[in-house]
Image (cartoon, rainbow, N blue to C red):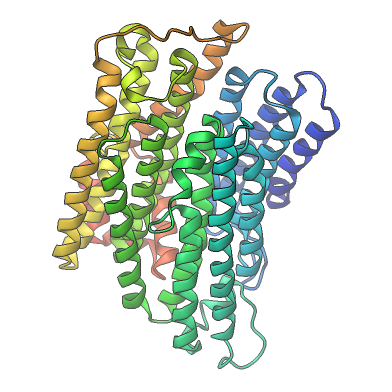
Amino acid sequence: MLLAALIVCPLVFSGLCLLLRRGAAWRLFLVAGAALHLAIVLGTWRAPAPFAPDALIGLDAPGHLLLTLVSVLFLAVAIYSVGYHQQALVSQQVACMLAMLCVLSLVCASQHLGLLWVALEAASLTATPLIYFRLGPRSLQATWKFLLMNSVGIALALLGTLALGLSTTPVPGPISLAVGQLTPLAAGLDPVWLRAGFLLALVGFGTKMGLAPLQSWKPDAYGESPPTVAALLAGGMTLGAFLAILRFVQVANAAGQSQFVAFWLIGFGLLSIATAAVFVIGGTDYRRLLAYTSVEHMGVLVLGTGLGVAGSYAAMLHALHNTLNKGVLFLVAGLLWRLYRTNRTGEIRGVLARHPLVGVLLLLGLCATCGLPPFGMFYSELGILLAAAGQGRWWTLALFVLTLGVLFVGLVSAVLPMAFGEPVEVSKRPPQHPAGWGWRRVAMLLPTAALALLALGLGIYQPPAVRDALKSAAATVVASTPSTVAGAAGADLIAEARR
């Protein structure tokens, strides 16, 4: 019942937005839908519902964890939208945002690979009108690039799903593409078709994640869409694509293809991090810089997943903090736009002096996404380093450290002057603040600060419930047990470093 409510609830509020188009009722529907959705998600943690191995939908550990992250981020974005958007945010666009929450919930709950594919394609379709928010030529170009690249990705993912289906031909009896049914029978799957399906799915769903070399849609989509939409794309849509890859990893690992899986995950992960490092150096557009850091963090996720038990735990931890950190940075981008009317890093200086609260949030987001202690990305990246060292992958470790160093220098050299530089005149054209800027600014600052404090708090102290959720999610991916994850060198040392 709760699982069905998770999917239906945002869809109902989306329909209400289309029915009641006048006035500002969208604010009530958006926030109420997001708050109710998070309440239902928290209720599923208190009473998790079991599901059959061949069930179409059900919340296992990875899906449950990522659904919670999506719901937390969406509530913050919903509250922020009330302050950021005026009448420009029409009811149809709010309906698309709520529909996105609906289909992302379905993505996280999908246990059947065919249904998962359909839900991810629906998520892309709901995001498309939101990218075309400004109705200009640059927005149109970004929208078409998003559609084109994601269409290529979803087509490759469909071929991967079909190839995985063909790999079941040696297994006697009827078998569906439900992960719970495939995993116990994985040893009998045809290895050739299984490997082909995994590679096609990795490239296809990796395109939707923003993995290199098919990441070129990200800077345009993140740069042209509103910061609220960019936050949902970076912290929500990418999680859905990552979960789809994890489903294929589950099946391939259960079939004894862990070495094959690790090779390609590590390769694509390092390529994505290196590509982001190249484009971050010398970047002058704040929003596009954040897009390239998203490419980096997607690479970190798949790299960690390819490094076994400890690496998978670190990847889940990284996914948690990436969602929170990207939410902070994109919401800060909206505040900076309202204050400076530009995304050019060279035209934004002295934020700490002029706007102390915004400057502090900017610095917190920067420290978090750069992986500085005590933020959680420090521990997740440390866990990946330890996992690589534990497997003797010294070239992987060296390349990971080198590219992270380049990214750190590029990002810090671009963002620190924005916070500490000498204040300059804002613009020849003063910012056009919306009516009621005081309360609107509070509505924008509160969710941004809440996400930043949550990221900082979870970096300093990790509650046992959160740790158990991360261990269970990692154990599901690597076909292990939570106790094995707890005893793995990387996860164990992460806990020691946190203490």
